[in-house]
Length: 261
Image (cartoon, rainbow, N blue to C red):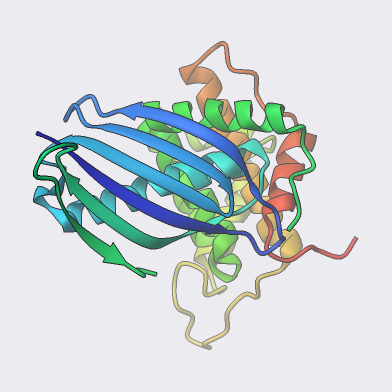
């Protein structure tokens, strides 16, 4: 018997951007379950269907959030902005005809984009597929999203994102620095900032902590996204890496606070 789990998310953006119209289909190779995702404006609808979808409602709740993270990560990388998913309700349908039963989880709780809509949608689809196909990209993009969502702790997530890429590709820090458009000395300074007397990754005896400065965390996330692009180009030689202006504009649009010029 086919069952359906339908989750409604509100996708919010502090800058007032809207989600472009998206329609995504996804098949889970290991389970045979399928997804249909429809997004637009401030809403996203996630439908998962197959047999025994409702056997574990807690797991279904988590899986829908994981899938929402893939969409928000794709929006970030495509240059649509930084969106936060908030689940608004969930319905489980058992069967589609005859004695249909259902349960519910309810109340679990601008501006249009300046890119050409059709171009942006294609970019989101493109990144969504890459994020689904490659776990190391998915982990690193998640950390880029977390860094911008929690700017006061951005370097924690940037550092971990870089580690996902380093370990996942089996490369040295020097190669990673080159992927970011810098030198190994630049990366050493970044690692020093993260690890010593700044309160970023470790507590300090004085209790002091580095402040979240827009020019710092924006630059760090740009470097991480540069490294993500380099990793994707190795996984898919046909992929055209984002240029510096594209990366900078994507991060600028995603930053919760617009920095002063």
